[in-house]
Length: 340
Ligand code: DAH
Image (cartoon, rainbow, N blue to C red; front, side, top):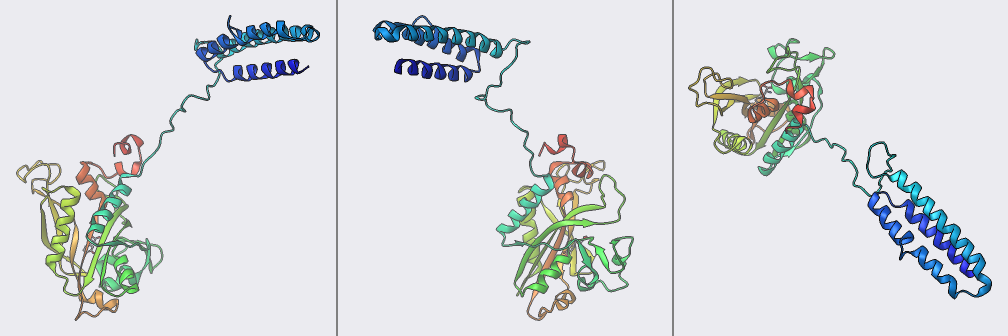
């Protein structure tokens, strides 16, 4: 009886291994192991002569049945697995590596924001965020733009109600940060801004800016120039030159616009598509924080001075990667995005 039990176990094991063979070569290995001329089935048959005579008939009969069953099962499995020939029913090979699922990556703008934060982080700046929907105080009044200021014109900002505005610059975060902490303050604030501009190759109703603010005792224009020059060299490359041009912003005094040198020409090509022959590309604005702004947030203007700046992120990205049209950054065509 125990011999028969052994036979049944043998059968189960053989069939199980057969089902685990998914390819022509593993199937052939199974055939050699079980049905081959020196195989397990043959060995089983040879056991017959050593058995007690009483067990021989039952054992021999069952062993023969199993041999036939395994032979038939092998033929069927071979049909199923095929030899990779078309028209044969294919069996899924669970042991093969899977087909890779395409993995996305962060958008170029997000990558750039992280890179900017990393560079300024090395210079001691923290990252701060603020709301995109803002009240008049934080986006206008506290930034030294009184009620009649032209920047408050609805032609320049999206109004949600008479006093709630979709921010047109990230400068509101300066106010929110200074209201919530005492100096020293050293932050950058990246984020989306909105303007009622007609969309074209260089304009969009939504884009990104990065704001910067440093307030402490004894902060000077030299610190501002050094910081921005260092940043531009770190982001665009060590050969980039920067230049400050006098300008006006309500929240800084004195104010300047920051230009970086053109990467296509030294300023001698009137048809240069990047700088139009001037040799310089405008990056954003900056200046020494107007004492009126410091007063609006309750800072002691006798003790503290500061600088601030605001850059357009799309402009930086387009300059660095030679992207001719801002719309490419928002259409989200993966053939474009995949390149970065
Ligand atoms: N907010 C300005 C703009 O959107 C950029 C800017 C200029 C920000 C000077 C500043 C600054 O903080 O000091 O054009």
